[in-house]
Image (tube, rainbow, N blue to C red; front, top):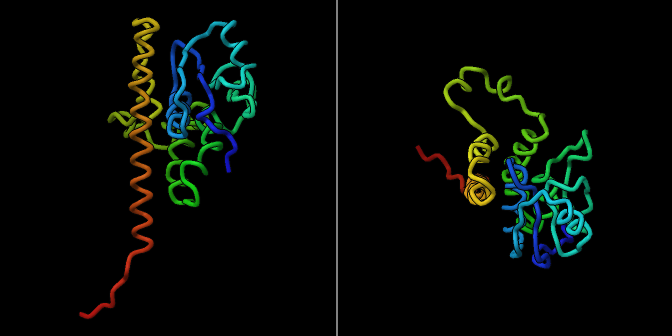
Length: 196
């Protein structure tokens, strides 16, 4: 069971510039878990250092520290990490978001695991899916999120694109929740005798 109350954080910091699905997914998850504070995207070392030591500021995907008690969730300091930022947050919120619901945890967890695998370089879509499917335009949710990057639009444009990319992950989680609901209904269905 998670012990972090995400509603007590006043702000959340992640890096600016190019974004990936792992920090986008982490932001979606903390919002679902009750975070209501300010969201800051910056690479300022002053802001980062202050944030890393502030128990009321979440730091996602930057800072080279993993310290959930302080709200620091970065995976880049560990080349052998099993989770990217989305997975680190998922491990903190899954029991809060879906208590006593292993089926929904499984389905949503698969979305998060796929995001982590791409970010950590552990997924090779070309091998897993075959070049024909890739050529027809298959793209993972991580690739779709990456397509929202517009660095030439400057910081404000990228911040807007980040917010739009959050909707991709929100929709993926929503779809996973619906698949889990259908699975639970199927498991609990009433099977009638065959009277034919």
